[in-house]
Image 1: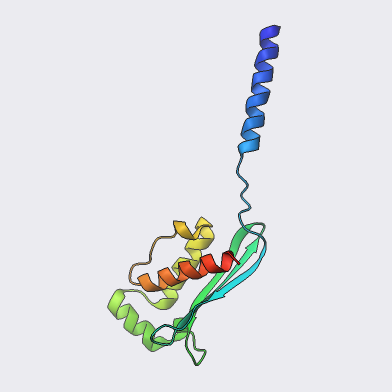
Image 2: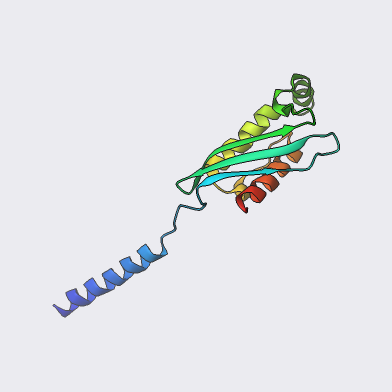
Length: 133
């Protein structure tokens, strides 16, 4: 009888510790977060918008915009030149980055996109800036 009581008490304590140490998946406060960079040497500035619902990143929109408010992802000439040089277009690179952030929920867990290293670095910096506001 004493053994059963002691075993039950130990089991209860172990379960209490495990429940108390369980991680909370809600990592971020719900809301919409944005950040924008200064223009680079070619006049493009990065912009990210992140939507958090239920503590998780549910939507990410990243693009680069020039002084005429044109999106790099929609610039067909730029996309053709980039794809010929690196094998990926801006729109494809941005989509990979956005999907990786939604999947991993942590910008530090995102791998660089081959052929779009500078865009990936700017994306990561802007995500950190937006989520730390």
